[in-house]
Length: 214
Ligand code: 3PG
Image (cartoon, rainbow, N blue to C red):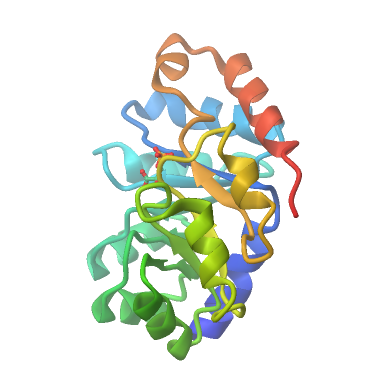
C-alpha cells in the first residue's frame, strides 16, 4: 500500500468522528466493553496503544465489536506493524516515523498515520505521499497555534494532533482548516475502566462526538 493510499484510508477513518480515543488497556476483560461503550457514544475509530502486554489481545477482541474500526498506536518497529496487522488492526499510528517502520506499513498494507512534530518532518513525510499525519506531542510541541502557522506554508497536510488534548482544548484544534480530527485519552479514564463504569465512558464519548469541526 503506497503512502498516498494509506493517507486516503487514514483520512476516511479520521473523518468518522472528531475524536479518536487513545486507549491504554491493562486488562483484556476491559477491551470489548470499552469498545462497545465508545462506539455507542459515537466514536467508532479506536486507537489501542501497544504499551501494555494486553494490547494485541485487546485489538483482537475489539475488532469483533460491531461498528468499531480498531487501530494500533505506538507503532515503533516493523515487528509492531506485523503483530498489529495480525491482530486485526485496520490502521496504525506512530509517534514519529522511521524508514523501517514506513517500509513495514507499505509491505503489510497497514494504513499509517505517521507522527511528525517539525516542519522538516512534515515535509519529509509529505514528499513520500503522506498527506494525513499525526502531530505529536501536540500540546507540548506548540499546540493549535503551531498547527495554524504550519497550515500557511504547508496547507496540503491534514493533521490528527494528539498529546495533552482535553475536551476543553479540542475545539481550539478542531476549528482549524488543517485538522481532520484529534486524538486523546480523556474519553477512557482508567478509573472508569477499573470500576467497569461503561456508561460514564459512553457519556464522555458522546460529548466528544458532538464537538463541532471547522
Ligand atoms: C499518546 O500517545 O499517549 C497520545 O498522544 C494520547 O495523549 P493523551 O493521553 O495526552 O491524550
